[in-house]
Amino acid sequence: MQIEEVETKGLSRTYSVKVPKEDLAKKLDAKIKEMQPQVTLKGFRPGKVPTAHIRKMFGQSIMKDVVEDMLNETSQKAINDNNIRPAGQPKIDLRANGEEVTKGKADLEYQMTVEMIPEFEPADPAKLKFTRLNSEIKDADIKERMDTFAAGQKTFKKKAKTAKAKKDDAVLINFVGRIDGEAFDGGSMDGHQLVLGSGTFIPGFEDQLIGAKAGDKKDVTVTFPENYGVDELAGKEAIFETEVLEVQGAQDAKIDDELAQKFGFDDLEKLKEFTKEQVEGEYNMQSRLKLKRAILDELDAKHSFDLPPGMVEAEFSNIWAQVQAEKEAGNLDEEDAKKSDKQLEKDYRKIAERRVRLGLVLAEMGQKAEITVTNEELQGAMISEARRYPGQEQQVLEFYQKNPQAVAQLRAPIYEEKVVDLIIEKAKITDKTVKKDELFEEDELL
Image (tube, rainbow, N blue to C red; front, side, top):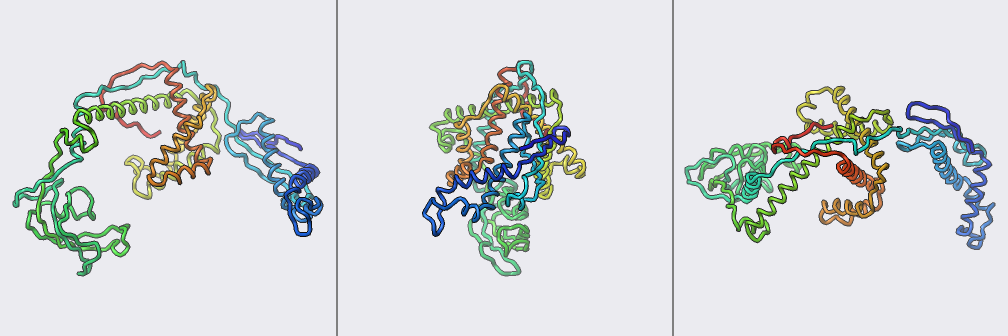
């Protein structure tokens, strides 16, 4: 076997590898002998088929497996012998005729190109300094959350006959929907309560009932969306003959023991305790998110080294696919929507570079600290993911058991959080109390 470095370009290394056909033949012989006890062919006793006959019948097919094994073995040897930390899967370029190689008539020759993880010294967590933002939880914050609970338990009370319906009121209606004068399935209902502004009906329907009074009869004309779930109705104009029976005003539920019991608590005090814990949890989570952002910003600023182009391109491709999907759906944020594709690509390529750089820094810091992700932590992550799909938990767990790559995607964020925990533990942290708005202020996407 011959391994020779033929090109060095930045973080890329290319090696020429040659495995003589004689070595392949020896591997083939060994493979056939290993298989012989399990081979069963008509005319021979089980396990007694001569090796020469196996070679004649299956030699080329077996040689393909031998070549695959040798590609893996020799490429790994080239990586190990040259102390390379690969940044991704090596690229293999066969230089020999594959048919001739599997027939045992030619040497196995190929070139392997591999990108390396750059060598750099990560920052010492003990020398880093950060400010952790916190905000005091006030009684008003608890009351605001309680008010939200109460608003979610609204009741509606009948208004006077002369009252005109306004947004957030409910109307009790009978309606019959027609297309080209013909009623259609599912387009009629009696005594339906509709909250105006809820967006539960076809766009435009609710708006046309604002200002209506009890006893009013009105033709509501709407057009079903092009992507409506019923093909026969999609894109069609419909007229709904609508009768308003009542206009009802919204009333938030009272904040009392009865409200608490609706949420499964014994009394109002228990609901208040839960609410305070919930708000505290959100504040603590936001404080950590802010601190983590500051940590990542500092790590990005403190490290400058060449990045493996393949890793950057892979990260950018993932980001760009999401951007294009959001663009096609009309969901780009206002700033991005104003930019040309060229400017968007430039901006998001910078984001890809930042993510790759930070990923390498965090991985190096974690390795130095001997941080690992335990099987128990992975199992917990799988179970949490499975719980997101009620009724399909077993299928989700089986999916992860069969897909190591999916498990790796669960491992990465766990590892990252453990490295961030390490930095928080070692670094000098100064706590600063700020207003709630500053704590929850959104950061730019980077």
